[in-house]
Image 1 (cartoon, rainbow, N blue to C red):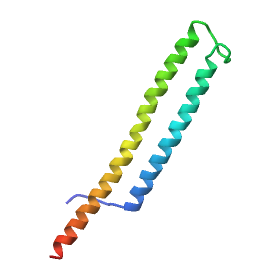
Image 2 (image 1 turned 90 degrees about the vertical axis):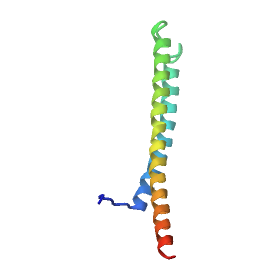
Image 3 (image 1 turned 135 degrees about the horizontal axis):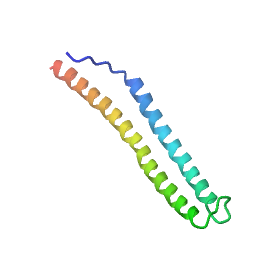
Image 4 (image 1 turned 60 degrees about the vertical axis):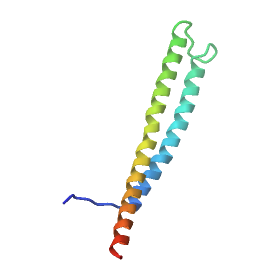
Length: 100
């Protein structure tokens, strides 16, 4: 027999925390990306004619890749919620078939 322990409130809390943190991280990353892009402009504080455009491009690509990875947090959050929903449906199905 499998060793299973399901705490629906804990699953829901973690799922909500993941969603909230994902949004906060994406917002922070967007702000950081804007700051770095501004810094690497000719009037931004770190301008090197040849290097700054390349650095800006590389950081933008890095931030986009990181943004996509962070969005995977949402996929995990959805997975946890789906597991909980499926278990609730299974439980409901068993309980209603036992009362017939």
